[in-house]
Image (tube, rainbow, N blue to C red; front, side, top):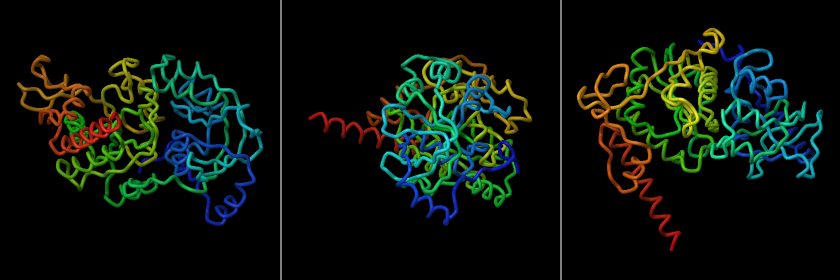
Length: 393
């Protein structure tokens, strides 16, 4: 089976005896409340999904990742994983050498940060390199401006894992997906990252990938996304429907991916691939404008960035796919690699147009989306519209 990134699957969850000790200690420690992204990052550090990280980054790793796309010791890593604080706005004073109790916004105690370093963030440089823009319209830039200007680095001891609620049935940590793959006898597994319902173009590239590997892990992101993205529970219902009706159950698995979206385009594509390697996947599907937003990234920049790394150091194999569509003349799904016909023969519906159709209760063409998925989305959008009208009265 493929090795975790860095060679070892990290586990930062304490045993029961230490859990009791740290729970008793926490009320006497300085306190820090994490936002939704930081909670997701903490949970992924806890279970090894972010191996080799054992905590939030210090200044050396942070600067190296931002400037060089590598951890300080040289291992490929493209996204900063940091913990922010607004120094001077809190009565707490965080000093290196301290233990800090970490809580979520509902005041649930999660973990202890063993503070090693406190340093000033270079947010302008971070945005310019990681997001490739300082434009306030970009959600990643908005996030950076919303958090504190100082970062806290250090290992974590996780006492209580994040609750997944209705998604718990689909929650599998890296050690569990690895066990599943071994039990199934799957040696080559491709992961598909998504934060949207699956339409026919997605289905097409997934099935193309399945022709060359043993199995598909549908691994939808369930952490924080933009406010106008479709809610996670609705998306999950879409995933269940399409797997049940259109994929072989013997060659597919569905598990939630608890990461938060950065909308960092090419950098996030590499990040998503590395994390799926920790889950035991050997391949990773990279489509058009992976993890993109607006016009900030080129259509296939998320493909090209993989050329910046040696195959051996990334290890997981990216599977690159062009934009797919239904061609009326071909009579099936295709891409520019396989179809010679003009765009007049291609059926493509923009996300905006699709949302308008769902909201109106109209089913888009079967060439765009499966009817079972459309039914779920129409129900969601009509319910949303009804609630908005009621609130406006």
